[in-house]
Length: 109
Length: 148
Image 1 (cartoon, rainbow over the protein chains, first blue to last red):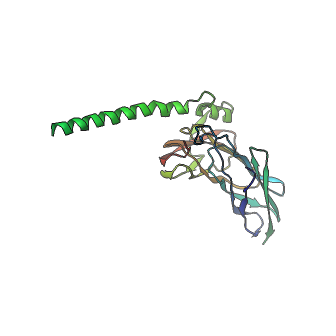
Image 2 (cartoon, each protein chain N blue to C red):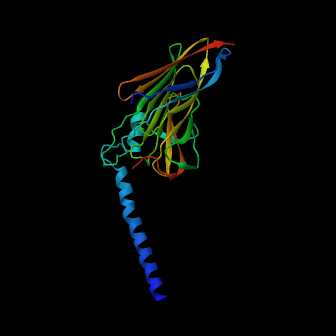
Image 3 (tube, helix red, strand yellow):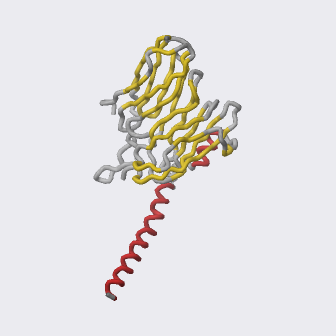
């Protein structure tokens, strides 16, 4: 499932000091739940992204443990406080061991 | 005329019978032995402490979701460190567990989830003082989202 996985993140380019900004993230992933069956009646094994984290300059913003009930192409929207200029790191952890990462820098306005 | 009425009765009885048969099947699908119950999952999250019904955590969800494959929800619990989201009517109830770090701008998040059927989704939040609150929201699902 490591192919065609593409993270998309929307973060403002600048923020005032201690401003609270909204972040939207989306990653293309089937999120196979392990509940579905193929046309021969065999259960399709679970294959999902099971964890998502967002950090800013190494400090945690949000850490989400994800279950098969999260929809295809997992989407998260949340808020972060910006104490300083720096870099966001967004990380998704796949059941198959793959790790997908996206980084965004932000300047103080 | 008499013949037609009989046929209607037969059809109605057959439909009622089919509905009765379907019910236990739907219930059995939820009772897999390895699936933890909602109460067990909440107890695991709270470490056995009581989660009281309260305003400390709110769920934003549509009253009616036409497509259970992707239902937009949000959870909000000011000051909380963690929020657990459960869908008791799904084959496996856990949905997500949000942990908020030092740089979280708010203790809130939105995502999209799968719901197999109409149900009350549950959110449990661990508040700043270490206590737990819970809340639920009913979502009517027109088309279930767990495939077949």
